[in-house]
Length: 183
Image (cartoon, rainbow, N blue to C red; front, side, top):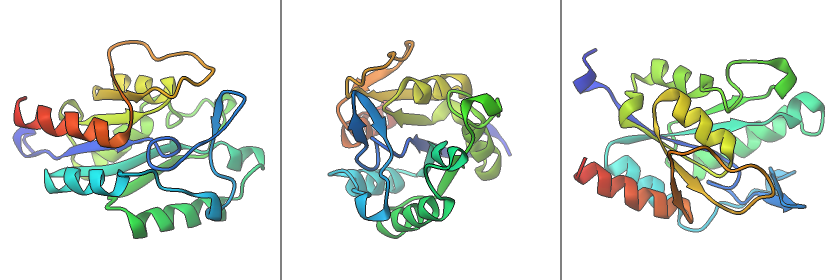
């Protein structure tokens, strides 16, 4: 496949980008239950605009609570089924590992993005990632994507530049679509 015919994607972190993260002591956590899963305002419309512009919408999320026993995989699966029902998503890639597993898929490593690129024929240089933690931005940079950082001022390290700071996924999408018209 020539690079001219490759597809473009927007990779989306889940918690804090698509749905509300539960922030405790300055640190974001995923929702504990399906009932606690709350899609953030403007997300559905923003994803629809990306799809209309020809982008794939792919969620890339670390969910280590499954490995540590704090969460059950069937709850995560149910959350993702609900997101697929309510949002125009093309795929959800999940890393269930903890840091100590030293896997290639856990962000800040780019494994989930690279896997999706191979599976869907995505040109990573023409793709974007929207995330709310340094790990997301580092994964985008390692994969060669442009990164948008939603800065919620969590009590953790900031990403390394380059990235563009935005207030929400709809803000990031507006910039992506503006760049798309003026590359």
